[in-house]
Image (cartoon, rainbow, N blue to C red; front, side, top):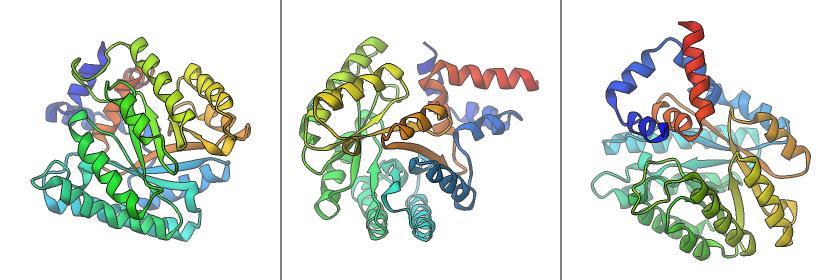
Length: 308
């Protein structure tokens, strides 16, 4: 019940001011977002890859209102690529991008987002890694998939994200489960209307399993974005039934959530990629992490009480 309320708060300027001004906020945000700059994040990258984990890096920020801000987002990712080049980690560290950051919602946004994201994808390919296009609310998806298809003409390793709670996703998964594709499956973290998305947890979980089966039985590379122990176990079973080797799929989880499970899966030989966000415009990302799981909200509230 609280999830939709928190998601609504993520769009509220008043709530943004209240949350960002709270003294306790930074110490809680640090659990999910371990730095504000590239220099902050390099030691995190070195530490996690040193433990046998892989990463996907996200420069946070979504509320882009000008082409100049979109260009700045592009440049922030290009700066990240420069640092990754020096680390020589290749595909062990990829990048995730939200096309809203690249100007997708602005006038002429589809073309603008494509023009801004292409240099990032090119730069990533030049250092031996890749980019995954994150899914946002359902109104943006046709544009995202079109950009994904266009980028894959030159950079076939470019990935995309699909969201189990949307009715359209089963058809999208069948289309995307092709040779060479990289598809991350998540439950979904945006407030969507009942006309386009499942609303109940058990319905979303069932849809997740149906879509995951399609991906596992297809010819692409599935990326399982979930912290749910039951879904992780189901994913392992579906991979086994499909005859997949451990390097033919991967798990992805958020930085700061179930960190011991990250290490356990890696120790078992699984590819385990940690979704690691950084940057100063962290508010929207942080609020969605609270909305996704009641335990995250309880952690935040306990911290506020204990320091109040």
